[in-house]
Amino acid sequence: MSLLFIEYPKCTTCKRAKAFLDAKGVEYKDRNIKEENPTFDELKEWVEKSGLDTKRFFNTSGIVYRELGLKDELDDMSDDERLKLLSSNGMLVKRPLLIGDDFVLLGFKESQWEGKVK
Image 1 (spheres, one colour):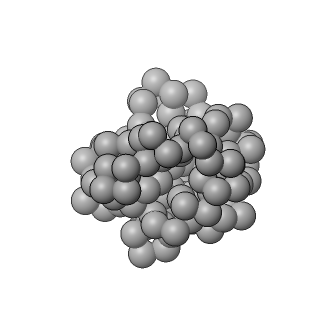
Image 2 (image 1 turned 120 degrees about the horizontal axis):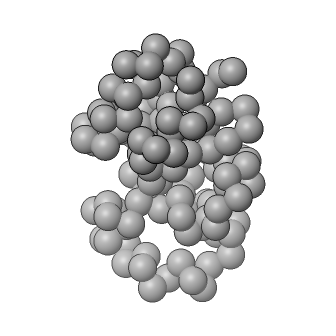
């Protein structure tokens, strides 16, 4: 199983998730979301794989999200418009993300991650 761990290194939740993976001896490829923003195609694939609405992929507590006033705008956007917006700035994307061959975990809830990583 190949895992991709997408994080913002200054994010405390990301640090906890990384410590969790490291403590379990899980191998993963680490990617800084600010330096290497997810592409439109990656996000589209991850949304499909996750089964979640595109709105769930937004970092609603982030500064950029609030500055752009997206709370009221997302409902009027198509999925493609949302994905374009997400792919324009990694700080808009909820993190951490853990992407496996057949799953995508968004945010860090230890109980969810426990079942996916051995």
